[in-house]
Image (cartoon, rainbow, N blue to C red):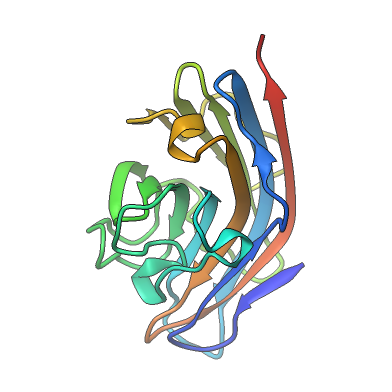
Length: 199
């Protein structure tokens, strides 16, 4: 597993080092599990993000700490993220316990507060499935406290631009995390990815 944060005011990321091709007829599916919990009696913050990007930073992509979740950069960039926030986000304005599909400039395209909440206790995990169909520009996020995927997505959105064009035909996948004045233990436990061509 990957531990992202150990203290306050940190940002960290872990990306697959080699980009995946993403053509106009391609779709992708990602599955990952994370654990985040209170540490040293701290107030808990801030959260994680699943990120698909093709910036000049490549696998070294890293956004701001705190509400930036290691994803938000404050500028437009060829990237899209699914964010998991335990703390009220000062950048996007979403309340604590929000899951969102977001742009790196700091805009949520759609968000919702899930049940159970995004923060888990020690030894309990959250399981996430993210699917994207490039021809329809549709992204779906499924969220569960078990390894059984729910039938209905937590979030569904038609993106403003297809990712093949936005990302220039290839994509780096990874997970980022951030803390501010409060912090929690944040761990990536598993990540699986698949890109398929839809004839």
